[in-house]
Image 1 (spheres, helix red, strand yellow):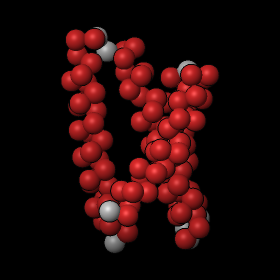
Image 2: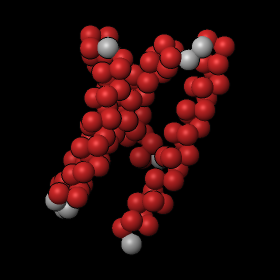
Image 3: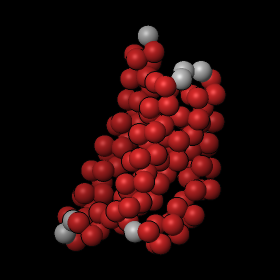
Length: 112
């Protein structure tokens, strides 16, 4: 319950500023920025593995995820036909939910 609340709080705090930045720089650039932030967050523990760098990596992964959630759905409206938009959004949420569910198992396997 605690981690779910933390995720909601982070999204609440970052979603509005992210949307404002997205309106300024564009949807595609915002998705690219979120991917870049996520990649940096994933690489940090490989460079230096300690508690501080893992916390920084976790924060960057959360920020990248929030930026992606804010910008990907509006970008999808420009790419997908209106008739298939709902099913595409639903499929994206299913993939996101499955990957979020599998993430801790993959991390535990990698740590072992």
